[in-house]
Image (cartoon, rainbow, N blue to C red; front, side, top):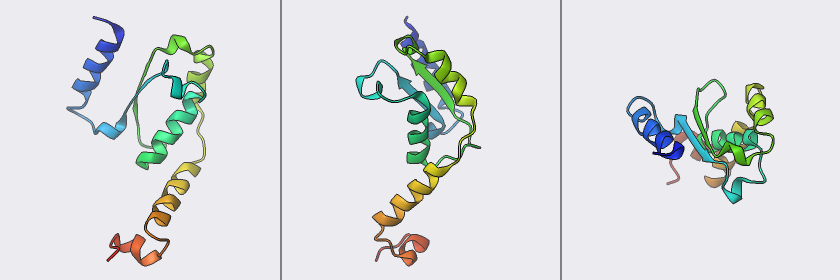
Length: 110
């Protein structure tokens, strides 16, 4: 059994005790992710799921060896960044609902 299989089995077990959105898995040999830093990928994930930095995530990075500066990227995960991404996410939701405050407050577009 390989490392990837073990990671996925561990995640499957973890899903019995925590919400799926609090589990993050990324295969870092994926071409679309190649141009992004790990911190950028995580920030975008938190933005999509509206997760503040205070929410703990279980992180699983597969194929870290494909990253030339993997140790530096992981070290930078400890840095607390502003939660600007949440404001961006809230604004995007606001605009999807038509930019009308009543819709956002009630979540009713009818």
